[in-house]
Image (cartoon, rainbow, N blue to C red; front, side, top):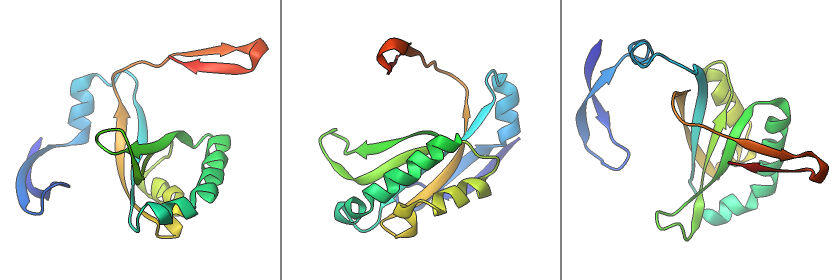
Length: 145
């Protein structure tokens, strides 16, 4: 079912009219080959890159903890559009059972708890793409392909 609603686009101050399709319909139409639902967190610097820098080590420690628990799928910094600078923004992808669980995980991040960054969470269904990993056992190293 398609719904029409008003929404505010991130790059635009004014409300625009958008169409929405219920998630189950999209899943049904796509065939849902993987069916892995994750939660994408866009983490935006709210007090500048210096405030982010002050909390990086605690943030990294928290991410390692999430990784050890199997909660963190991926995370990393977002560069400026030209790829030359870091302004303090990042993206994280969590394995969680619900938006509220993902919010609790994000709230526990020292970067968010300190107010250095704000965040937005969106559920994400992995549908297309591929990933490969080569593990060199004798060398204790790996490559993402």
